Length: 262
Ligand code: SAH
Image (cartoon, rainbow, N blue to C red; front, side, top):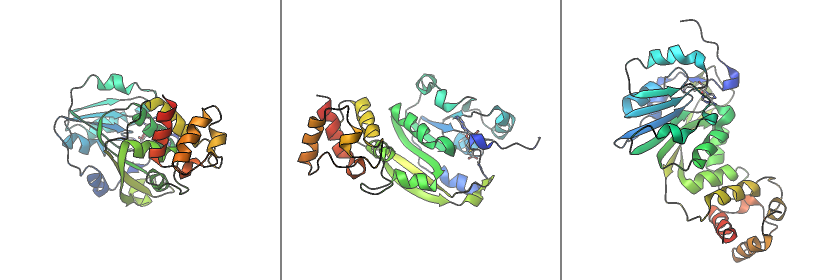
């Protein structure tokens, strides 16, 4: 085959260290499983997913990888690849075609859209057994940040509201081709019992708005909300409207959201 032209704009850094690929797929898989992979590339992770899961749904934006990808999957038939932009895709519509009991997401994500991809997955509110993604190391730190630290942001709240987040292992930049400028980390998200939120859409919007300007107080970021209701919740937790979002735990965001949706 012709040499492949790696496209920076698509975040194409292929994982060349096969031991890392094996470690990524080294998880217990429940029966009637379906796994979603975003950004299959030439299929070096995809083929391991095919060997492990009952069904693999892959999304890949770059048609130029198609021949290589299908070649690498030639031992398998339990996959469907959608050559499309994952961000534009109606994933619920796609999933409706399949019969499965346990859903997984596993991917070495394109780094230029890590956050939008994860937000999309969370907004779909699917019942996912486990998400395991490779991301830039710095981004992984944000997933796991504790309240009050500089890395704690709306993404942290989103993710930790829905999942138990666990850092798995760091992957050196030399494990990729082309070599990126940063090291990576594999992070897992395990399904958990969420705190009850009456209106999930409001909750996500509230969190996003609270962190809109990180250095600003809640009073400034949430001007268009009912501030006196918010103040009541803050006061009962020992804060007032001069607090910044990064100081507030997930439970307090849930409480504010529920107060506002009465
Ligand atoms: N999974 C492969 C490739 C990872 S690189 C490996 O581990 O080696 C990221 C891949 O995501 C690239 O193949 C890139 O073309 C693809 N990609 C980038 N943006 C995408 C998008 N919006 N939708 C689907 N795939 C995308």
